[in-house]
Length: 76
Image 1 (cartoon, rainbow, N blue to C red):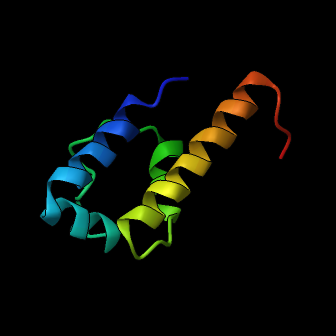
Image 2: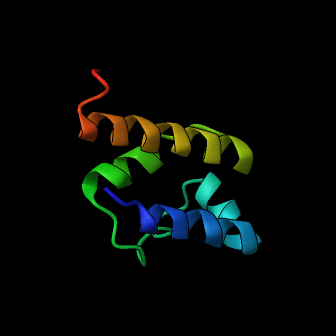
């Protein structure tokens, strides 16, 4: 499964400091313009990182686990 929307969120956070601040602080409506699946939205809102680097690392971990699970190589 491709995660283009998640990549777009990370890209937006890289170039837009206001968006990045709102993303890290879980400001309501920050993600409303992105067409996220419930699973992706849950993954993002579950991230507890206080820095963008930490956010990206946690999100990458989720993507990796998700892709491995989809391929049958990972068991929870």
